Length: 634
Image (tube, rainbow, N blue to C red; front, side):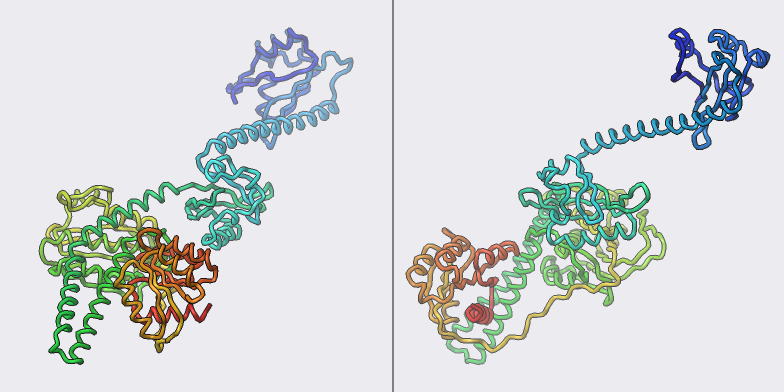
C-alpha cells in the first residue's frame, strides 16, 4: 500500500467530491507530518477543533486541501482490522454549531471499527466469488472428473467430465453411493481406501479402480482422494479426482500382447524341436507295438512311455497357451518362486541346449502383490534377452532373494525408498552392453539386434510391467562378461502367497447305463470317447456337427440323458448348438469341451445353460468322473 485515495463520502458537493477523487496522500514518506499519514501509520485518532492551531504542522499541500474544502473542524480515525491499517475515516465538523468532543470521537471510532469489518467482509466475499468462478472454470473444463463424497460415500458434486466419460447425468449420480458405479471386484478395495482416508485424515493417490458407464462398459480410472472438511475442521467426506486411463490401459495391453507374440515367435524353433522329438518317440513306440513279436509286458511299457510323452506335449501346449493368451490384468498375492518354477519347463525348451538355465531361489522369499501373467511376461522377456546376448554356449541364472532397506539407497542413480522388497535377478554370461547403450535399452522399439531378430518391445514391456507394480528395475553390465537385470518388487511381509490347490487323488472309476450324445467334428475324438464310455457301460449316439446334433436331440431327447459338446466346430458351432439344445430342453445336461478357451468364454457358456466344462486334452478317467458327476448332480 503506497497511497491513501478517496473511496466514498457523504455531504459533499460534486465539485468537492471531484477534488477528493483527484487528491491522494503518499504513504512512503517517513518524514511526512500530515494528519492523514500519521493517523494511518500510528493507528491513533486525531480531533481538531481549529485547523489554524495545527497550520504550522501541515504541509503546503495539506493546507491547500483543507482550504479548498473549507475544513475548520474535523476528526481523523484509523480504520483497523485485525491489527492492520486498512484506511482512514475523516469527519468534517465545520457545520456543527458546537465543538467536537471526546464522546463524538468514541462514537466515530466505533463506526470506524464496523467499517473495517465491512471492508474485510466485502474483500473476502469478492475473493470467494473469484475463487468460485476460478474453480467453476477449472472444473467445467477439466478433462478429469472432480468429485465430492459425503461420509457415507454418496456424491455431493461431480463436474461435467463424468457425463462426458461415463454418460450418466448429474441427477443420476448426485445422491447415489459411489460403490454403485464401481465394478464388483473392486468394491471392497475401494471401501477400505475410502475408510482409510476418513480415519487417517490422509490423502491417497494413484489407486486404480474400474467404474461402469451407463452402458455397463468398464472404464479403468486412477483415483485420488483427500479429506473434505467444513469450516470447523470436521471431516464431512472426501474430495478428489478420477482420471480415465482406459485408452492407456488398452494401449499397454496391446503393447504387452505384441511383445508376447514376438516372444512366441522367437520360441517357435525350440518348441517345434521338442514337439518333433515327442512325435518321433510316439511314432516309434506305436510302430513297435504293432509288431507281432512284442509280448504284453513290452507293449505295456511302450504304452506307458506314450502316455508320458503325451503328458509332456500337453504340458508344453498348456504353458504356451497360458503365456500367449490375452488376459485382463488381475493382481493377487503370489510367490515369485512359484511363477519361475511353473515356467521353467517352457523356458528350458525355448532356448538352445548349449545354454544352461540355473536357478538360485531363496526359500523364504517375501510374497508380492502382482499379476501372475505379467510377471511371467517379465521373466520370459528377460530370458529371451539373455539368450540373444549369448553367442554359443553360456549360462543364464535366475535369482530371488529378500531385500530390506532401512534408509534411502541408490543403485545406478536410481533412488530406492526404505522398505521390504523381493528381488528378482536374471544374469547371463553373454556379450554385455555398452555403457552408452544401457540408458536407451528400456525405450520402446530401441534394439541393437539385427533385422528380423527383435522389435525392441521386450525390455520396454518389462519396464512398463515393473513400474505398474511400483517396482524398480536396473541393469548392470560389463562387456564380454555379461549382464544382470535386477528387479525390486514391494514385498508383502505379513501375507502368504496363494497356493495352488493340488487335485484330489483319483477315485475308482464309475460306470453307467445312460445314453450320451457325443458331438465333435473330429472323428478320432468321437471314436476314443465312444470306446471309453461304452467300455464303462454307457450307450452312445454320435453327431459330427451342431446341425446334426440338434436334429438327433429333437428326435431322441427322451432317450438322451447327457450331451458332450465340442465348443469349436465348423458351421453352427458349439455355442449356437448349446443355445439350441437349451431352448429345446432347458434341463438338458450338457458338458462343453474345448482345446482352448478363456475363463470369460467358460463363464458365458455356464450362463447359457452348460452343466460343466472339460479342457482338451483330457484323460479318459477325467471324462468318466465328470460325466458321472453331472448326471448324478442333475
